[in-house]
Image 1 (cartoon, one colour):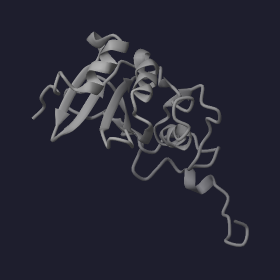
Image 2 (cartoon, rainbow, N blue to C red; image 1 turned 45 degrees about the vertical axis):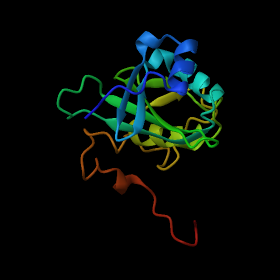
Image 3 (cartoon, rainbow, N blue to C red; image 1 turned 60 degrees about the vertical axis):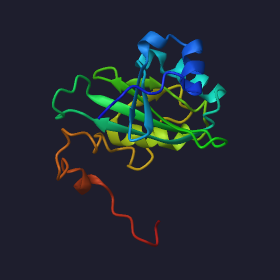
Image 4 (cartoon, one colour; image 1 turned 90 degrees about the vertical axis):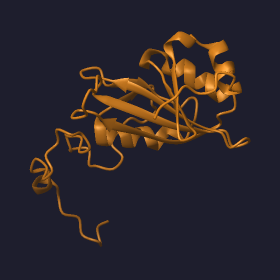
Length: 171
């Protein structure tokens, strides 16, 4: 069951005084607060959240909603934020669709976004513009696909046969 969060929440009120509140969608589920932000306003909202005390980016991940019933967007990118002083947590979501799978990098806001964004790029193909080192993190540079997409075949596309075998002594 989803319900609106407390409209008097200090974080919500402070954020809505800084950005266009009409474009933000707040919800709460089992005492977890969520915020859905349009992709073109993501950077401004995230900077404001940082200024308002959300000083740790805990994780960045993505969800491919290709086969989700009633899904409007293909990819949902999820940011987990934490205020280390108060313990308050916030889940921030935004959506991207092909062919424009780009979002602004959060590295200038939280340096810890560096490897997290690279992992999302590696697995889903979502590019973070302004990232200082946007290259593959987990897979070889020659790998051309994104294995956590729903349209990627379970057994792969034969890529394993093309990679060189590296022995333990060579690694």
